[in-house]
Length: 272
Image (cartoon, rainbow, N blue to C red; front, side):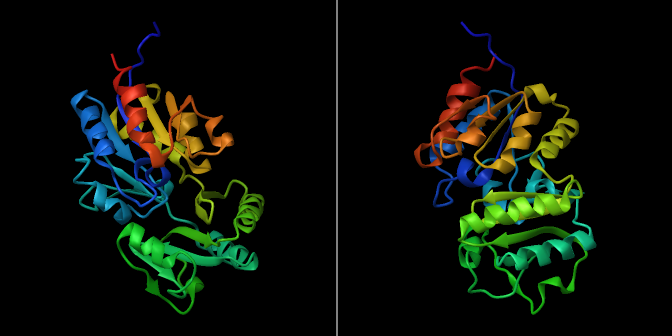
């Protein structure tokens, strides 16, 4: 019989992991998180979403841990007080906006608590507003205000184009910024230290939990850094083969209760 692992904290991605394709938290997923708490295991969320875009999870999951939005670029308490913030330097933000535009992608900017777009009928704006439960501000020039930017986003339904833009952004920015797709159609450019691996390190320090006692679960390349920093990692069934190869184990898809099944099988059953 395999030795039971000690897990003291689970850190979960949101879209494609914790919620369904319809952005719904299922009763089974909610019950799994509450069972974690009963087992003495804490639970935290991190996402490319703005922190306010995760507010619908606070009460159902009884969250009492810091909430890490923008892949760790902005960490808040559930009363929205800021615990930690990592912004994109103004010169990097300007270059990112230009690079994204040069590739033919639409540009969004998250600045402070505001989501800025050039037009409401651009791809994915309406869907994103429905997902995060608040709307954008329309501005004539996205690049007019470059201070306090948490994230620059490139958006397109041409997924190959987004992938090329991601590769070129990584080449252009090297170690001065993080460029990753949070969804196949979203390219996120954030502070160089804003990544989910840094979220795991932050939560480890803030909550006093060794990284080897942290389990992580996600589905996108942006989740791989937290896989690498945690003692145990779970890839969703809807993740790519490349993402699955970086995780300790895989579970079912988010369309088939993959999150809840992972908690039940790999965490709750294995806990000492």
